[in-house]
Image (cartoon, rainbow, N blue to C red; front, side, top):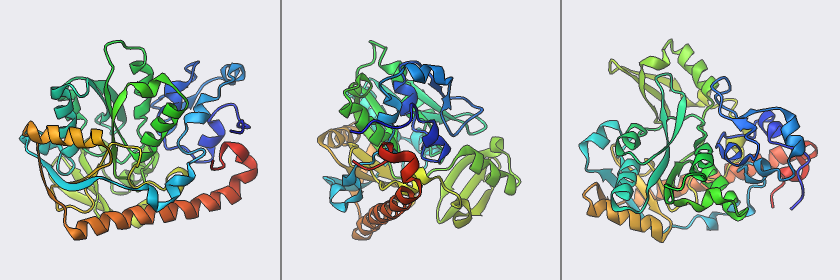
Length: 354
């Protein structure tokens, strides 16, 4: 593995190759990277004097946007054991859920059965700032229900988790690039990854910076404080406290996406135990893709605990999921090649695929 030409992820951030997963914050030995509300879509990088002392460059080694494995640009990597339509049987979960509440149901089932003792997920404040949490409390897990569509540094909570003796079995909920970062931590032999026993990935085509979302909100003459739900259904949909819905063209919203999202090949994560989204299932249901035996175990426990109902997914639904997987892989490969040509000299070995 070639040594990066940079001492930290600053240049990566400046060029737009940051999906703000929080991994670099978690592993920095000097705590020189932090989550700062004044930079809500990037890690805040502290004085370079700390990085001058660092010989590990762990922030570079665990970044999911650097050295993306070749295997992820190969459709053969995206295998799964089972696929279902799923919906929570808990009315409180369904009230808060984005779609079918499958993710929250699995987390609560895991806590109740002891498969996990803690959860890393993302809540939000009234202004839609993402708030990563590490919790064993079911009510707090419930508060984290619903999609935010914003970069959220969930993995930063591993910095706390690795120091706590009362936490040994974490369920991580994140988008595929975050699960990819966790896989990198594991391959680096970092303790941060050892405590994560269940990986739940959410379907993802892209995310938005909070700054970009603020621009969209301003165009619609809305206020973050009035928005109770965001959704993507061929367009951006914002639901407000008074029950009204406001839409924004998705094609317009997607302009100027970060290279981080453009180059990413993962609609689902092959490194996760289970993947969850809405593509391929009817309204009010989730599509659940089981990748590992651990994923199958947690799904079966949620059904046993009467928290989740399952039914076979339609052939049409499967084809749609496969279409999204293929499209993301092809688009990621295309943009990756473009960025390599554009930034090759600048990024050199720190960015080239392994």
